[in-house]
Every structure is written in structure tokens, then in C-alpha cells.
Image (cartoon, rainbow, N blue to C red; front, side, top):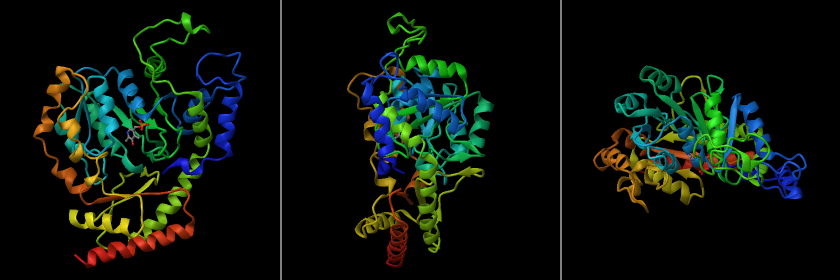
Length: 400
Ligand SMILES: *Cc1c(COP(=O)(O)O)cnc(C)c1O
């Protein structure tokens, strides 16, 4: 998945364009910038490649999630339904607005279980936010149906799934708003960066203003711009956007390499009858950033994870025991450890975490291993890795 593996002269040239003028800012300084508008160009590329009307670059994927919710009017006390398996950023971004993350179970897609979502809906629910983890997706048709029935917004956290599609459409462009991350370990990187995408022009205007202090971007004198509403600074710099501009042009190449490596590994692991693979909803095509599969039980998954590390097979994550991606280890959230007082709405809204258990999520995450697909492997390396994985997992199963 990581685009940083392929940092090349293409990236260096784009960055050099920016350094040659010294205009590191995405807005203004028209006379000085010698025609270089890297952030604008990257937004245009994203719109063209993802077939979406509007893309707004921001400083990070976390900012993209906050901006997505803000532009749709989600704030204090509003409930956002999201999965127990995600990156901590997804709930941080919700809480930054004073909204309440309502965590619900995942299913064998490793993303939101539509039945669990339906049960969690209350009068305060404003949005459903699937997180398309590890290059694949939630059942968007089912979730869209629930949103239509209950008049809710669908916000896609597609930070880990650029390049994946559902019924031929790019993930992130199917809901009301979508979010991408271009941090250093994502499929394409800006170093740090993110994007909000939408086909809704009002949301697009909100995102443009909100991510730059509410400036309306009318005219050429920034100091004279109006402020139709309050905003923050979530801007990306031209240097970061320049790196992303080179990377986005290589996205099809990255996805093709991921698919080739994934296919070799998957075919090898398919020989092990005890292994089942993550479900991909009908009409879905993964980005192949990870190969995710299930072992028969938690203990076997733990042993396999340990044995793979010992065999030198790096990048296979057992998220059940991981601090970043699964609810089991989020004591800081459950105990609401903050540096500052939080609103009564958030305090009350998160009380459920003191008692709620997630057996269904444990059932899937406990047995899951997700293995990162690297771009830089040679075919021989992938084949050797496949053989090593099969031998290691077979040995763990035999020793049961
Ligand atoms: C990486 C990531 C984010 C946050 O992106 P940053 O650019 O690191 O802030 C949000 N959600 C998910 C699912 C992610 O993987």
C-alpha cells in the first residue's frame, strides 16, 4: 500500500517547481508563483480520476473527516454511527466537532454490519460513516438504503481505500461526502495531506471556505475576503500537494502492482482449507492494499501472527492485539482522557462505552490477519513470501 516506496524523480520535479518560486502557499501570490498551482492541480486530478465533481485538499485525513462532517452540518451532540474497527483518527475527527461517535459491530467484510447500524439509530443520529478498512469496503447499497429510510447522511472514510470501486464507482464518491488520507503510509502520499470529495456543490463550497478560516475566496486580495461563516485552518501546503500530484498520476500503476502481488499470495493461501478470506460486497473491487483473511479461532490467529513475524514475514497485522485500530485497546476513549473539559453531550453520549461489549467484532477481528501488500517486492520475493506464509500457517495449524 505505501506510495512512499516509489519516491522518484517525478516527485522531485514537482517539489522542485514549488521550490523554484518559493511560493509554498496554495492561495494567492499569483504574480510570484510562475503558474504553479500544485494543490489546485491535484484537486483537478482527483476529480478527473475519481469521477467526482469536487475535491478539496486539506492538511490530513483526520482533517478531511472533520471537514466532511462540518460541511454537512454535523456538530454538538449529533450521533455518527461508525465501526469498532477503524483508525483512532475517525472518532477523533467526530469528537473534534462535539459530535458523538457511536461504535457498532463489524461483519465479515471487516467494515460496518448494516444490521448493527440499524439497531444503533436514535433520534440524534445524523450520519453513518463506514470506514473502508484495508483496501476494501462496506456494503454500501445496504447502508445507502438505511440512510434513505432514516434520512441520514452517508460519509465514507475511504482513507485506506483509494483505488477501490463499488459498482464501478470510486470508493469515497458514493456517499454524500468522502474522505481520503495522503499520509506517509497510504497508497498515495503527500507526506501529510488529505482530501474531501463530494458531488454536492454546497458542501464543496463549505469545504473550500471552512478549511481556510471561512474565507470566501472572492477576489485577489485575501485581506479583503468575506467570512460567511467561521472556519479553521486545515490547508495543505504546496510542497505536500506537489508530492501528491506526482503520486496520483501513478495510482493505476500502484493498484496494478498491488493486485498482482495480492493475487499470488491469495492463490497460495487458498491451498489451506482452514483459511477463509474477507468478504467483499457484490459489485466491489478491492484496491488490493492488504490481503485480509480469517483463521479458525483467536488462538490460532495469535500463534500465526507470532510465527509469521519469527519467519521474517513482516506487515501482517493481528488487529485484535493492536492499539491503533480496534476498540479493545482504546482505554483513552472509553475513559475519556482529554487534556481539556469536553462538552456534556460528548460525556453523556460516550457513557455506553463503559458497559458495551462487541462479541461479533471480536469474533471477526480476533481471527483476522491483514497483510500489507508492498509495491517494491519483486515477483520472486512475493513467491518466496507466499511459500513462507503457507508453510508457517500450516505448521501452526498442525501443532494445534
Ligand atoms: C490514515 C487514516 C485516517 C487519518 O489520516 P491522517 O492523514 O493520518 O490524518 C483516517 N481514517 C483512516 C481509516 C485511516 O487509515
